[in-house]
Image 1 (cartoon, rainbow, N blue to C red):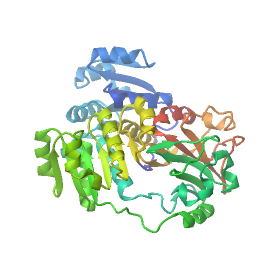
Image 2 (image 1 turned 60 degrees about the vertical axis):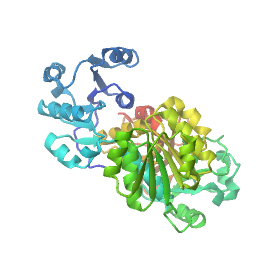
Image 3 (image 1 turned 180 degrees about the horizontal axis):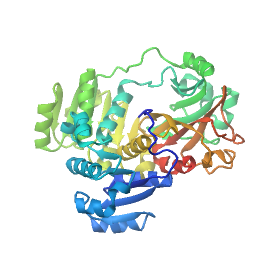
Image 4 (image 1 turned 45 degrees about the horizontal axis):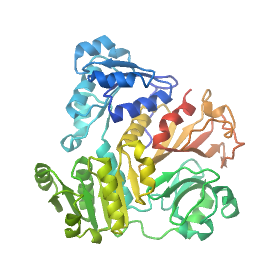
Amino acid sequence: MGGLVPPSHFKGKSMKVAIVGAGKLGLAITEALLGGGNEITLIDKDESLIQKVSGRYDILTVAANAKRVDIMKELKIWTYDLLIAATDQDDRNIVICSFAKELGCPQTIARVRSPEHVEQLDFIMKTQRIDHIVNPDLACAQEIYKYLTEKYTLKDGQFLADGVTILEFKIDKIPALVDIQVRDLPGVLQNILIAAVSRNGKIIVPNGNTKLLAGDTLYVIGQEKQIKEISEKVHEKKVYTDLSRVMIAGGGKTGYFLAKKLSEFGAAVKIIEVDRERCEWLSAKLNGVLVLHGDATDTNLLRDENMDDMDAFVAATGFDEENLLLSLTAKQHNIEEVVAKVSRKNYASLTETLGVSMIINPVDMCAANILRFIQRDGTVIFSQLIQGQAEFIEVWAERGMPLTEKTLLDLDIPEGVIIAAIHRGDDVIIPSGRTKVQVGDRVIILSLLSSVPRLEGLLKH
């Protein structure tokens, strides 16, 4: 996720958006776009599903097959700013986007997951005139790969606005920070803000009462000079981990994409997959990867395949419950890096107790990716994912935004969101509750991906 060239199409106005598919991703996008005050039409051919959704959101719902051109014409799809096709079938999404574009819809986005399609995305986008494609499985694999192979992705500080830098480091490098509350940080580090804490695989956006604990990873933000001084104290010289053996539970799309990247990196990878036909497909597609046919929850199989010797274990089956169980098993085997893919938000409280290295939610990642693409109006200058769970964004503060109307203390800032820094003219401000964002400021915000829909309410204008 990064900055994109801003067209003027969406600038300064709410959008009229058609979303096809009322599954997890479709609903996550709906929530995110509603937060920005957009007009949404949600389309799904499952009438019972549409009835459930219609009671939850103030949107237009349509029970129909969006592949039918007559339905598109009845909706007057050419009057919409954007169509997002997020059904569970790639070909359906591609066709729906193509039809919508042919009928005059100016922008289309498709969810496309198949590895065969991924190898020719540019061609698909060009021939079908699709403006953006999202792939939750590939996005997850890329974030897990980045985490496992580049332990300090912000090793020397990630430059944002002029003079503002983010740094990631283990709290144990500065022992004086352990067991203090965030409100007492100035006694140890001056003019520095702790924007996020990674604890037991979960990103926490702290408040003044948050207690810092041994083992935490901190994401701090401050002026470039100060961050550089801290960086010299806390960081090891190497970037890459000694990652040589990885076990992946689940040979689905995420497992496939991740195994391919890790194998190319040079790691010895084992995939455990319960479906024999899928195992044969994986064996044919992945060179140098050991594909095992079996149930990843079988402790005898895990023992026989030397689970204890693994540097990392990734639970990426299609079932959240299984991934949580496997993660717990891996931690009991003292594997250093344990990653779990979990799509259901109501499992968030469970994940805190597992002690895993990283929890990743493909639905939240995809929704945030789509949101940032369609906000290419110059408001969002920059975005940076943090462990696949949160993002730093840098935005222009524009007239009419709720963000500019009150002090931070009086603003209704959603839980999971923090205003991390403000760049005003030549000055860098690490804000307090009394700070007020002014029109023209460049504002750096950290938000959990799950909080993005509520954050949009502060940024609409």
